[in-house]
Image (cartoon, rainbow, N blue to C red; front, top):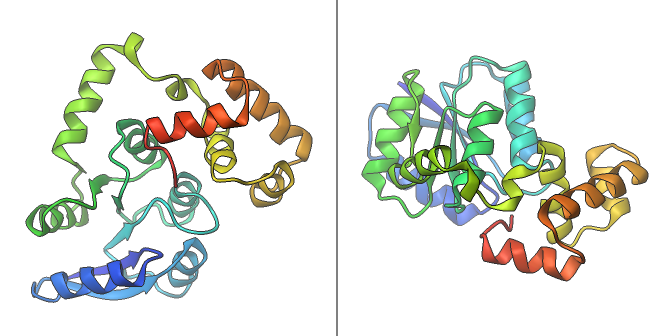
Length: 211
């Protein structure tokens, strides 16, 4: 029996998943969470989950940071990302942070079930379309989009900036100084050759990078 922890900030998504999974006798939705804090709370009080089905874009701690935190304290727990983002580099960062699989939300139920069973069983799973694009990116690195050049922290700051967060808000959320946030902002804009916040937002829209 696969004991599953579902994490998604949309109740309707969680309910839809539970209805689909309830039709399968080998999968039990043991708990659910609406944000990263809820995920961590469940993991502190229960250690018998076989899989975390995780949305990348929930309130609070960002997806990549949450994955890293979970793997630091619950290294054996497989994480399958279930996300609206079909941008290869979002998937790449999730896998790099420690996720064992990545599937997009417009996948059909059978594909989702295949991914759940494979990752819960210790395997890896990448959405086939994303896998093809990731392989292409690896073969032709000179064609990668500018945001791929960002460090993990710079990308984190970038995502928060385009979400409308101010420097002070980002500093509080990431537990770093205002000066450090400003430095990351300067570096990421230099790497991406972008000169103002409006262009950052426009870039995020073009590359489907909004949380």
